[in-house]
Image (cartoon, rainbow, N blue to C red):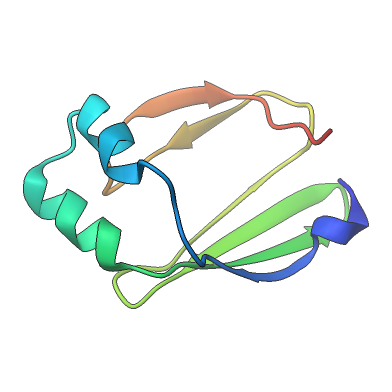
Length: 90
């Protein structure tokens, strides 16, 4: 993982996030809450793991993964999908 990604990042804006959530079938109530949140991401490298913490006034969650290795991700609270994911950085 590029060291330059490590740190604390604040979301300033998003583009068409509501359209994305509509396409995923997310309820109106959840969309309205999500659109009002300003997330903070804390990205760390711990050994060979990338750890991403998402912090907001609504909910905090943490997940970790190894770059370029498949893992299961659960989008709990958003659209409750189970996904096989490979994350890599360009």
